[in-house]
Image: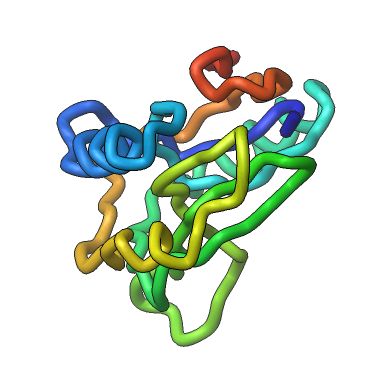
Length: 146
């Protein structure tokens, strides 16, 4: 699906775990590990190079902005919210955090409107920078590589 990815994986003690879980339950959709996507759809060698290149700088505070919206990639649907790096007046990268996934069909407008915008920052103590294997179409089958 997304080959190898670089994530800021949200740690289990963070409120985002229960947020993602509650949306999965509400929409009867796959549960998954909350994460901020840094890069996706890389081969393994590229992912490892990018990991080592970016790991020393993986200490940002992320600030949510805008409203949650839907994206679709090869029949894989996500409700996500954009993030910027706190303290910067411009966007260094297009970061987002996924809040719900659907592998069966698109989310309805009503479902998207049910997802509350995040209103808190995500600090370095809330995540771990990692490589994940996301080849499978089932999010629960994705696994950490490094």
